[in-house]
Length: 515
Image 1 (cartoon, one colour):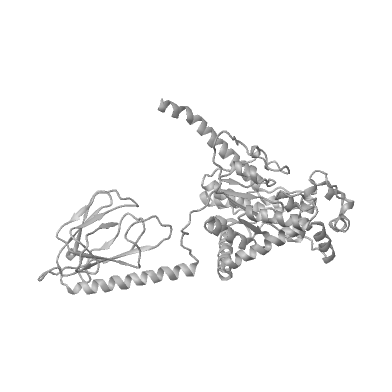
Image 2 (image 1 turned 135 degrees about the horizontal axis):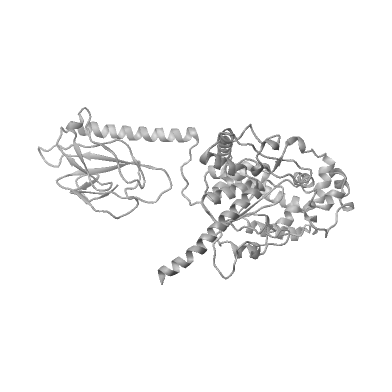
């Protein structure tokens, strides 16, 4: 509701004569409705601007209509406001009955107009109602504001951010770092908004070769096509990524404690890396890795400094301090944020703020995980030997571990703890809604084949069983949250191919219309 006015020097608020009311939804269009022979004062509560504007914060605007005595012998009454309106709403509800009177003796009578426009007529009433109406509006406005604030704090409701959600995202998916869970978050975010993914031809973007733009399915350098998200496995190569993604893209990746990563890789990549098959056990490999390792063998990067390799470095290179520091500085400049899998929830809270996403956007179930009983503990000696073997990964991890906690400190530890608690509570509620049981299913046979995760090497990957009574949008939401990455990738490929086919079929029709 927008009000046009002319100044009245004799009153503290803006005098309107005649009053002009315009019904609008973030627009200046629409006719004015004059209300002649009125002298009103328009006041405003809680400091919101009268001018309607685009705002993502759910503020409420409280308007108070207050009467005054324009001349001797004339008494004017005011209207009592029942509620507020969100900025950009189309109409405002007013109580037309003064305190103690019946609707028939209303100060205002309402006449329906075209669209959402309403015309109010003012009749005379005793002046004593003026003070009563004003006091009631003020007290009700204050109480409603207090209830809103207390409810927001009690239930963890955060006002919508004032920023715009970012939809140009580059995620460097590293190996065995909880990156499959991050991938699912990105898939769901883009899928629900019909964003365009830079997808591979198969299941990765040319890995282990350095990324090239033509690894993206459908990429054509002569045709400008906007991709929103690129997030499948690739070996980072910034110049080529920039050929595919917009300049304002947000770059991030995720790292993990290198010893835990190596243990996971040894179990997971038994069929992919010959070095792991040659070694009788992880302990024997760690004590004498050169006995089993071949530097130029296919997939050798999986057995040494795999994170350094994924970020574009030489996994077999020596760790000269000057060169390492130069590489770390380049990575600092290239990536806007680096997550840590050991502090996954804290990482997602930082990611949420950086991307201006909602808490619902980053909710997740852990994917591609093993049972805790299948994860062996490492002795201090084996941990020390692995630290020497993966020295470049440790330099990388320590560097971004330090910068990560600086980001947490800047965010605020108390605020971080609060938001992490909210995220975990949301996960708990989603689990009770979606899942059969408290977590991953101990027996994958109870999981339907279309959502059953594959197992690799010696690793037994756990999946989730959904409740059988799920239906409609709830079932679809739950299914997307537990869908293994290859299954989801296939769905996105089919979806984008259908969209591409529709566009191709529509092109001749558009040309005919122009002709």
